[in-house]
Image (tube, rainbow, N blue to C red; front, side, top):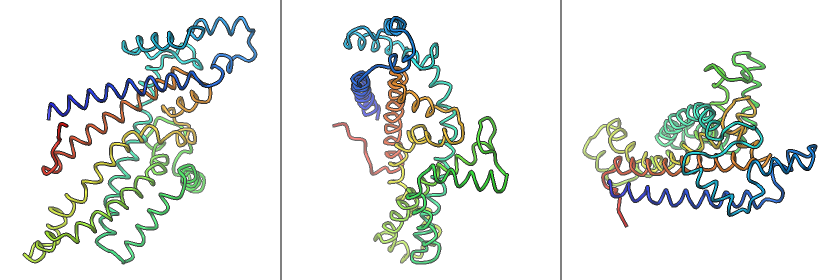
Length: 308
């Protein structure tokens, strides 16, 4: 296990280096630069001074060496659009905000999706199965911003139960959480239904029934454990989706999360912010995949972590 983890960490370091390098050069190859885009009304000399201040007047390879050296010491630079605001400080302050809303949506979507999938499978061809199918279709086909608008109109405008926007209280997280979790509910419900049906048709389930094992024990000891394994694989990308999937919701509900800064950094060509958030997302994804693989091995002893 330790050898496998060490090998995966080594691959993660190489992957992070490749992602960082590609992102840096791709961003700098976009026509124009952030200073010229933000300073259209500034005198040419002022624009040139800003370019010198941020090192944009240097050759691209030299800029890369400076950035890489600083990044290895934990310095991701300062934002161009928000002068004086360090990228790592922005990530540190805003990532927990995105994580809270996205985390609530992930947990709610996972619990409800698994429950709905099991219910649908155990009632195949009956009305609960059809209800879950309709929920899954809605979660897949309705865009998150449409769902957010509908929920905002229902709970905030018509019923006056929840605030329309803002941040700071639990009530302000309810509507965006529900809006975000519909996609997860649909995904997990569909996969869980399919997995449960496949397990129910297995020979060892038929053998257990023939031996007189109760339906509750069959579901608890055999069906659930084997059907949940493929769901674990989906959790890795979903964890990253906690942060990357909330851009629209954060803007709709005025949530000061990391998505707001990432979207604005792309629009304004804020190189340090783009690269910093990309590094953060990539690192989070790689760690999540490693954790999921380890959990997968513990969840099913038949699966071994092989060192190739």
